[in-house]
Picture 1 (cartoon, rainbow, N blue to C red):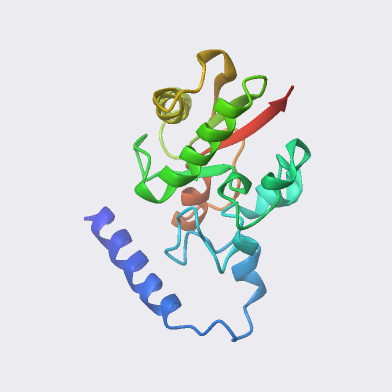
Picture 2 (picture 1 turned 30 degrees about the horizontal axis):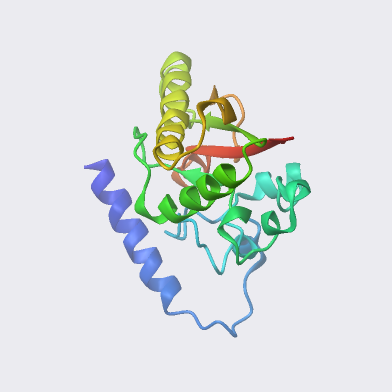
Amino acid sequence: MKLNKTVLVLAISAVMLSACSDDEIKDASLTDGGQNAASGINDASTSGLNNGSGMSGSEMNNSGMYPNAGIGPEFSDPNNPLSKSTVYFMLDSSQVQNDFVPVIAAHAQYLVAHPDQRVVLQGHGDERGSREYNIALGEQRGKSIASMLKVQGVSVGQLDVVSYGEEKPASFGHDEASWELNRRVELIYQGK
């Protein structure tokens, strides 16, 4: 029942946001990532939110706007899927949502073309559930993305999976909006 209410709230929020005009002044809370999940827009495109980066507010603040920007200009171009370094997940799930498939495909294509590059898939969970459960779920989320990358030709030697569980939240709130931002995998490149 709780999941049905959440889906309903997200659907209503998405409809309300889609009615907004692009030339309206955007509320600052909509561009800092703090309202990403509450808006119902929890996909890789988030064109009106987070400056189009698809990243949470803490990811932009802690690592700069684009944490992989030092690798190349394509990682800081908001129109390039490589600039999106966070994949979000549904509650209790390690299944990659369809919205993030093009982002993962772009990273796979880049890694295949640059075999000297390595990426760490950092899995995270929200604060609900035991510490052990969240560590395991974060690892499974990272492995889901690793599997998708491997199927597309990325070498196992280019991938590392680490899980932080609930230990490194993107948002410190104790509500659904914060929990949605915390259920994620961050793709962090390690360089050459």
